[in-house]
Length: 215
Image (cartoon, rainbow, N blue to C red; front, side):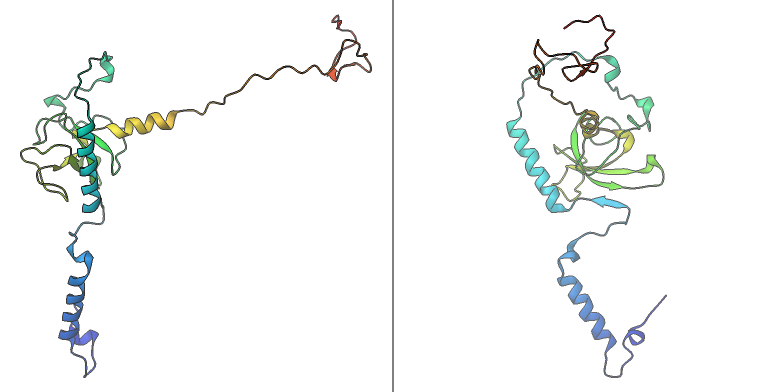
């Protein structure tokens, strides 16, 4: 539908063009005017939050220990990215959320293989293969994008290019079972050796008169 200024402000003393200009000026003066437009199916983190994530990553880099450790891992726990696996999702059970830590496992993108990052945006789609994730990577790299972050550290990747590290931690935490800690209690002797047997009861315990047990 198309509406003109006179349709909204039909009064003789009302100037529709001036009213529209007042609204435009008010919108430009509002803080939300600086935000970029996004589709309704896009989940994103604001630039201020992304900046805080970058600060925390830099702090972790300073505390990081560069000591190399060799570990033995079973083959079925490893994921080997191959060119023939184009479009194959590494883990179909993984659930991706904002703030999740991920690692790139594909070679045909500008992002180096093995580079880790944080999800700062999720672009939904009808097909799982068409879902795109906006990732803030820990390091700057050639061909990197500026997605509400420092230049050269952002990129958009599909599900087939990412292994979700946070999903594994989340699954382990969710599968932990609560264990009750029971402390041994000293036995309480409710009866003495001279307690008499009456009505088939022994010191408050059920006891059959035909039993061979003699206290």
